Image (cartoon, rainbow, N blue to C red; front, top):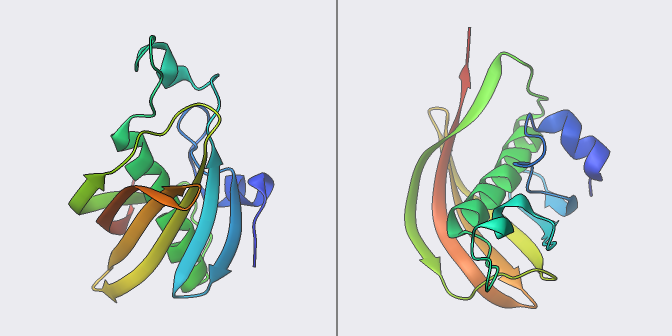
Length: 147
């Protein structure tokens, strides 16, 4: 299964400039997801990071991976979140940044569900550019109801 931007917007509460998933290439329900983020020189963070050599901030690569993980979690549970549900980071382990991501790159987001226990999801995640790992980490996320 794949998802276009309209389907993603129905699942994720994020909007410009923090929506960081442009398309879902495939979802293997309860197992893994492959998604992409096109990196454009028009991204607002490039204005200050760094004007002389634009590089995507590592924390935003982790956020893109977390958004892909959320899409996998929602698909796994068969739910569409509403305004009373928020999907939070619970932890990030072993984050490594292996190559810069620059304007013109296409960031491929690969996330695998490792464990789901007591409302906490643990994922193995990596972001690649042209088959080369840019970022990798283990992500822990949870859904919470808000008032």
